[in-house]
Every structure is written in C-alpha cells, then in structure tokens.
Length: 427
Image (tube, rainbow, N blue to C red; front, side):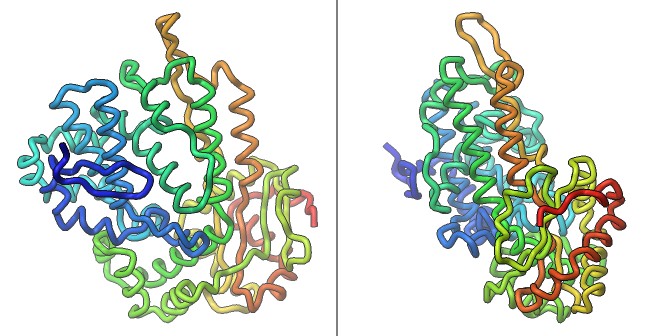
C-alpha cells in the first residue's frame, strides 16, 4: 500500500515513496515554479500547471506501464526514476525561453543531475544509468521519451488538454496496455492502429488550437524579445544564471532590468497588452484559413520553399532580433513595437512515424508506410495551421498594417525569399 502518495488532477494518487529524496531536492522542487505551457496561460487561463505536476503524472503513467508489462524491480525503478527526472533541466517558461538562452534542457538536466548523486544512491538508482537515459543512450528510456507512445508524451497530451479546456483525449490506458518494446523502439499492436491514429490527430489538434495559438505565439515572442534586450546588458557567461530561475524570478529580473525596452515589453506581458497581427504569411493556397475580415491586417501566400527558408531564418534569434529592429525603423516606431512571431516549419511538428506490431505476422511496420492518407491528413492539418506573423502594438496596428508591402519587402530581403515576391495576396 502506498504510504507516500501525491494527488494531482486527472490521475490516481502517484506513489512517490521510493523517490522521496529526489522529490525533496531543491532542483526538483523548483519545477513547481515553471509552468508547463509558459506564457500560454495568458490565452488559456487554466494552463497554469507546472513541470512539477507533469513530472508526477509521467511517473504515475510509467509505474502503471511497469505493472502492465511486468518489468522486473531494477529496470522498473530505473525507468520510473527517469520519468520523474526527465524534465529536471527545464528553465523558466520551459521551451519558450530556450532559443534565446542557448543550450537546451537536456544538457542542463545533465548538469543538474550531478547534484543529485547522493539522492540517486538513496533511491537505489545508478547515476550513470540515468545520465545515459537523459542522453538517449539507454533503450529503456523509450518507455518515457518515445514521440508517440512514451509516457512523457501521453501525460502532457492528456494534462495539457485538461488544463487548456480541450476534450477528446484518446484512451491512454488502452494504448499503454498494447504498447511493447520492439527492439529499441516502441510499437503498438496492430489491432489498435486506429487508436494510435486518433492519438496523432489529437496531437495535431492541440498544436493547431492550443500550443500554436496566434495570441500565444505573440506573447511568446514578446517574452523572448524582452529577454534578448536584457541579455544584451550582461557580461559573457552571465546568461547561464537564467537557467536556475523560476517563471516569477525571470519576470522580476526583467521588471528590474537595465534595459528600458525589456522593462516596457515585460509590462505589456504583465498587463496582457499583446501585439496583434498586421501581416500573416501562409502557405500557398491556405490564405483562406486566416480570419481577417474587418481587421487591419494583410495575408500573403508564399510557395513552400521560400516560406520554409523564412521559418528557418527565424530560428536564428540574433538575425530575427536585427530584422525586427529594421521593421520598427521602417514604420518609425520604437524597438520592440513590431515583432515577428514565427512558427517552426511544419515538418518539424508532424508526429513521427509509429511502429505497428503484428502479432499474427510476427513483425512490425511503419504506420506512415502503409497509411499514406493518414500522413497526408496530418500534413494538411499543419499546412492549415502554419503561418509566420508580423505583429505590432495594438495602438499602432492600423498604421503599421498600411505599410505591409514595405514590411514584406524587408522580410524577403533579409531571408532571401525572392521567390515569394510574386506570391498572391488574398487580401
């Protein structure tokens, strides 16, 4: 009987008795102060759940998985400890701030893990084994990290949907029951192929309407630009200090910052005076998706190759910083009043292929190999979702929107998307 359990939403009580030393460590406790969806809570008020809650949910799903599949005590303890610690390296506002800090939460997690050597020993878990799992070198890690069937993915899909307010999550328990480790990859039994297709479509739906919501992307870029402005005032190496902050600490750091621009942008976030779209660039043939009737904005359709180049250009945050400065200057506005809210190029967001195991045939195959209609359906979801937006402060939106042709020309010049020059504008 679990004597030390924690209750969290949408899960049975999670037994943490075997991992209390890890749970009590300050590095793990600081996950309470890092929201799972970052500034998306400005759009979805219920999305204030934290990395701490998600880590416990992931542990609970992993414990159930170990019981279902009868994992022996030692590998079960290892994979459960990894489930609890897999997000240890996340900084403030989770993924939303990583691009401007440099590095990633996996590398930072390995640095944090060094401080937990004693606690890992108390829990009967080897440091080298957990480190190998964090580096993706241990096949057992797939039970947690697999992009389709891992407990990390299954928990955050269900938990994020709950807190955002979306319904329709697939049957997670059924999926876990018929998942297996096929070599070094997870697979699901063929008779449940429709359930895993539903899982991937739900992942797509959450991205379209939740994670990549246009107001959320505007808020995300507002936060990133504020951090970039303040980082520019620091000495080399000082940016690493931000990794240890909670969300509130980072916001306080910006409010008290040396940069007037950073302070101004943080104040906009705090009061939810978010930038609004003045120019949306969408894939050719998908401009109709943008709801722009009666709004001071322009929609352009670009062929996919130049649109991909623009999206890739936006991953260079120093180049993006400079482009935003030119856009603001073009309209005679202060730095930071015009921003570019990018979206990762859609292929990076498509669910990965999933292995389907056929018990009758005694082998496995890739879902996308056999069901090309399903893959095309997922690609269509992202083509309808994908856009790169130029956003401006609301009080200047109408004036900036009238400059859309100059803004588009500057963008084409900056990222070499000359092929987009003749692209149609649906209005």
